[in-house]
Length: 91
Image (cartoon, rainbow, N blue to C red):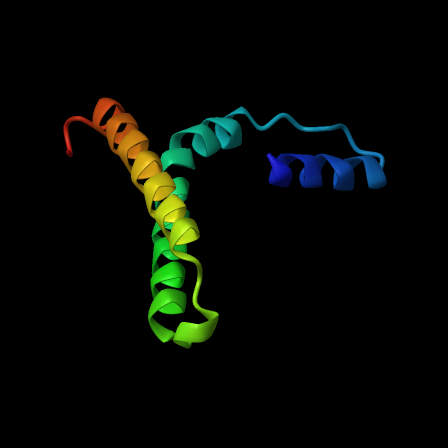
């Protein structure tokens, strides 16, 4: 919703009537699972890069790695379920 708030702040700045953006809100809601999937993919790739290129002596502790992987699996599972429910025709 940052864009809507930004647009409305600019409208106030120029003393114009604030606009409502219901289509943008709907788009944000519809895109949210895809955005989360993209962010999760980025996070996983970044973690993999860090884990495979960091010198062993300064490596991430095993417990932290395990926690990260577990959280990623939980997030991915919930995203899979959500996308499967909302977009069953393309799954």
